[in-house]
Length: 240
Image (cartoon, rainbow, N blue to C red; front, side):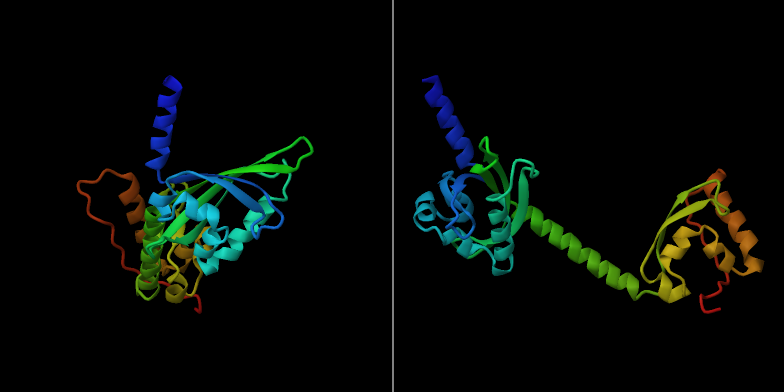
């Protein structure tokens, strides 16, 4: 009874999970190098297809993978059918998959191969995880960053990120400059980040001392308020 109850709990856990479990055996005649002999019952909830539909149509899974991802998935799967025990495991890769109702899902496959004593693959264990929500968030963030970079690139203001460094002349170690800094100053961001004096040396001599003193005071001396530091100064462009 205890074993049966434990099995029921396990089945329910899998059925309510976004992770599909599967098992495959080597099959050189298959497009992906494997004959899949088991899928957990939650394929219906995650993908819209029942286990029977997947089992009776060997091409179904591959046919629902996005055309731009399909060859990459096939190549990786075939590789797993030929590697030896020294190959790093598990292997993971993402791809787009069309749900039975037409929705596009993002799936991540994580797979591990078991080898016999001769180092030949004998069985593949894997899981397919619905990562659609995570992928959509990543794509939205990436799109937002691209838009921000486009705005900054066309802005008359260069952005920078610096850390306090008492050994630097102005008390700052610069670790980032936005991509438009070269357009504005004629000098690359990497040049400024590689030489602490590159920016300071281009400031007009009549402005430089006050700027350095003001920056160091802002960083290292007590302040009565949180007002930002603002400097106005003359700067020599990279073209002279």
